[in-house]
Image (tube, rainbow over the protein chains, first blue to last red):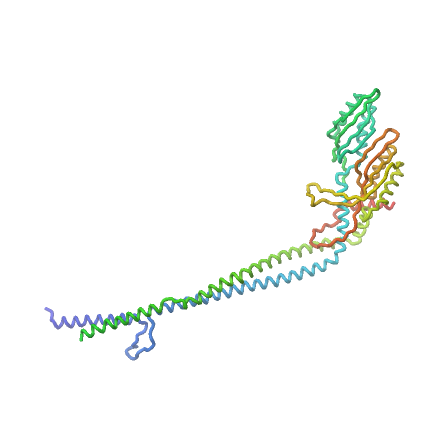
Length: 221
Length: 242
């Protein structure tokens, strides 16, 4: 059987332990004990845990602000610096180009004279382009006519740059037909057309139209 | 005694709880705490839009301009090399030949005189002879109107009569042996064994002097690439002198 006194002391001890736990829990809430080693009292108010957390958070924010300021500063330096360097380079290149242009003005007369020659060369090429000796065409037609007995040329004209028409006479219709055949099968002519013919007692007059093949007559420059 | 103790404990606890709650309230994040980071962010945004972006744009433009200037510099170097290749004495000689064959000004009288003298040499008789200044536009094949070239010239409608052989010789001389650059148009022959008549239009060309501004960045072609035509000019000039 337990002694009532023992029970009481146990209860007192329990209460005492509870008090000690409360005190220790209170103490845990504080970073510092107000009572230092039971020798002195700390009059500076200690910070609570939440305050400490908040202080830490503020410190982090301030560090972040500092870092962002440094980044801002760094970016500004880079951008402004690059801009200044680019401007300096641009001015240098412009000056260099201007000097070179000034030096080349000494060649202006040579450029003008060169262009004057080129202008005349261009004129010559434009005039000569697709040009053929007229006599070559006339001679060619005469050669064909000479293959048909009794044929002669009485009129010849250029209707366009490649078109020709010519008039003549031949002995008879057979010769005319032969002449027509020769002209139609000539490799230097195309679109040969007997425009008209008329027969008299002694001769047959004819009018032919044709186009020349330029490549066959053009004089190469 | 114990009741007094019990009474003081709740009061003390309450006070402590109140203190703690006060401290918690005080420890909450306030506007004053975030004002610096917000200001920095705002400043960064403003700087970005008002300063950095325009500065970056102007830097990019400057760099593009530097590239263009370097290309122009290269063009000028090429031009200088081409110009130094040209012999000035040879250039003057070739220019003189070209200007004699295609003069700055072709007088109507000079042109008509040349044709008439040639016709006389070929024993042709003049039936009609006249001349006027003219302007000829030549279109380049496959190109549009903007590339048309206009040339000045003297146009002379002619009629001569003589033998077919002499007429053909006259036409040949005009075609191949003329000292001038000539084009012959609308040739028409009519005749019989005894006498033929030729009607045609002859055109002589000239290139007048004009003030030309030199643009160093225009494409420059050396005239020496056209050696064949220059040789023809030289031959025609020699014919003119004869």
